[in-house]
Length: 518
Ligand code: GAP
Image (cartoon, rainbow, N blue to C red; front, side, top):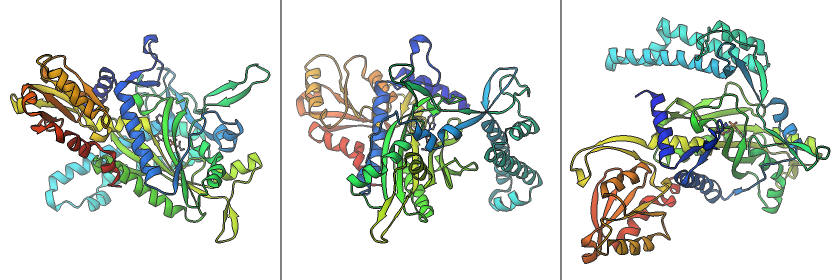
């Protein structure tokens, strides 16, 4: 199935099962803004909780913060966002569609890379075990020519972006013969910079009000509170401050569902360190963050690192952790060595010292920072796409109805509902017994009670929202206090005593067992 079709299926599944709705849908929606429904809110909370616990509970030297969305406007001058937080945009005059100029070039490069990889794959099949990929890549003339093309475009794009040479970016787009995907034409406007921050007015009267921005990243709330937290928490360098919260960007090209939104949530951690140790900590956090992803049970080949060609205005080293989304490998998380850029600039603009006094060396310095920054919504999309699965069910298999099922094979600790409690029929005292069981479980787990429809239909509904366990209460339950426990992924069922259910479920769904892998 084409990747686009998979994404479409995921979007409609998210809507049908209460995970994600288009914002203000009754008014035909608001572009690139989404609401999380009853199951989506739970899944999102569980991801956030995993991140928060991994940061603030497992690291003695990382503490949390919850800073305001509105900040003093000078914050954004100091951080560089007023002057440099922009994307180069270009319009196609025929389709009137707007694109990020750098993204058009990146997609062009990606196409050539895909071609090269396909050629290598073909050769590997042709030559079998004797195939030497390295040698093939170094000697095959077509691959060499394409690699040269990729390097050439990359280098020129990087130079043009760094020197803000917008006319050269346009020239490059023309030379690469990039066409508008909608109109198919090369009728482009000039490239121009577009600031991504949303601005609004604070204060009651026009005279007395001042322009404020909706924060485009949560990180600045951490920087301006650096000394507050360090002093009140008596933190010693190296230490980190973690925060989750909303961020806002007026994205030029906002598409691909919750991948690129105008209102989204970030989970960021700033790690304050001694200048000169940044590469050591940068590598440390690269490793730690990948481990966090893999501990959820997502296969390693779904992830890769990508070093930034164009460094953001604040960074001296930066990479992305990319995930293999239905649209291909894309940025999921950023790890940035931000030097003393932010604290140094806040010192300059505020006139307040933002320094750390090192008692061992008896001197003060502005700490360097390594940051890890992940979009919660993107992590949500990664998890949903990884878990979404359409399967055939063979007739009679474990008593399941034959046909197809859609199942979300979510890591159990993230599932919105952990256990469904289902009386086989709506009479003979089964609902009452089911309620007793539900009452014994609901303090530990998010449970869901349902007695409507056939048991098969109820199983399918639970599969579709990723519920790892279903408990069925039948007539035998009334006789010997046993129930059927059904496992979501294998659809296996076993008869167990009600006394043991809590322990079995706890073993599989607890956050603790995932955290202990870190
Ligand atoms: N403080 C650094 C920072 O904000 P970034 O690379 O611009 O760095 C970090 O953003 C992460 O935030 C990204 O890796 C991505 O997961 C998420 N993110 C950024 N823009 C987003 C958007 N428009 N919609 C959804 N997530 C976004």
